[in-house]
Amino acid sequence: MSVETKPASQPTPEQAKVIGTTARRVGVNAYAGTGKTTTAVKFAEARPQENFLYMAYNASIAKEAKTKFPAWVECRTMHSLAYGAIVPRLFADLGKAGWGAKLGDMRPMAIAKAMQVNPRMARLIKSTLESWFCSADKTVTDESIPKDLKVPGGQRAIIVQGAKDLFAKMCDPKCADVTLPHDGYLKLWQLTSPDLSRKYTSIICDEAQDLNPTVLDILKNQKTGLLVIGDENQAIYQFRGATNAMRQIQVDERHFLTTSFRFGSGVAAVATALLGTFRKIPRPITGLGKHRTTQFEIDRSQTYCTISRTNAALFDAAVSGLESGKPYHFIGGTEKYRFDMMMDAYYLTTGEHHLIKDAAIKQFTTLADLKSAAEDTDDRELKFLAKIAETYGERIPELIEELKSRHDAAATPKTLKGGIVFTTAHSSKGLEFDQVVLTEDFFELTDDKEILLPADKIPEEELNLLYVAATRAERALQLNESIRSLLRAVQRMSDANKNAASATSHGEQNEAGAGRLTSFASRQ
Image (cartoon, rainbow, N blue to C red; front, side, top):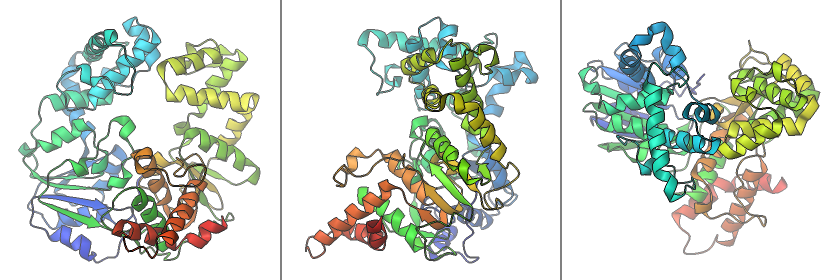
């Protein structure tokens, strides 16, 4: 589900410049809630003579976009285009009914079994192949091995060949136990150098900050007109190999959308302080939402949304809230948060192996085996399951049962009455909520003495996740200690340098972003 705040019926001056441009290749950097989709729709409406492709980030966004764009815009994901071009030919022998069984991701343990290697080697092969899937490279090479993997020189050639052999099995319709990931057929399509100008005259690329190098390579080689629109500060999928196309695609004109119709001045100040403290931003964010003044204490008698950095923190928050008796709504449904897999991990602790449903967990005998495999393969999901199993132990069945019973699947964040909505920062992207509570598992921006960390010590994606989570709030935002500490530190710096003749525009930007929240942050 994707939600965009409706801007005023008349375009802002910034939007009007984008809509009325005569340039063929246009870049638009749009802050959270500034009406980028509305701008893209009006851009297309002004050009009925064109045949547009609207590139959506995922299928749900593509489906929603079809209801907004005019008839001369085809709304698709790159994966859907790649699927149609590759899968029917590649797996023709299986028949259409057999395609689904041959597609899907593989866990390291399944790869270890298929390739007859140990779990560590399986993880290295899998990571290398995934790295290649998300690159512009034509073949797997030594450069495909992720830089963060510590691989002895003597094993590198073995890993590269293992990745090539695994990919060959993925593409072989006869290898039923080895599936082709969705990024795999996208990679195959990229290798064919598709020419989209045969069907489209212009392309609208939404969420351009989250393109991976494979899609970026396809896009850069097109001869069509181009509208690249997104928010550089919402790039939160680097762990999937995404790259910021906003910085890499050459355009004739570059525009900015800085007026948010989602939130008021308070959230705008928080967002400006978050970004402006650690990176250079061209302009501060302006908040012109229906709630012009932000409340920094939420009304718990009304529905609010808890946004966490991790699934583990989300589970902790949901369990902590059970005593309130409030109804719940989990964005994406409870199945998105691995409740069934938590039960499978619990069954490992009780020895009830016959009750385990997940095939990957079923191959372990004990929780210790699962923990060992999680460390050997660096599998985040297995680590998360082990943590939950150890933390909650025998309480897991009753807790999960109660969480599922609390979940109101028929409700939406807007219709849930007096309840709590739960989501992670990644899943919250594109959504908005009346009230937001941020959990304490986000990245710390200051040290133990509450001194700002150097910008190069803060991972770009972690800062972006905080920005995404904070800018989901429309009316009220309960800050976590990471942001409160940042605001106090920035205010002290601003006070100390207030009269310094050498104050830079960057420093002034920080002061503007944090000054309005100083008294609130100090009280916290």
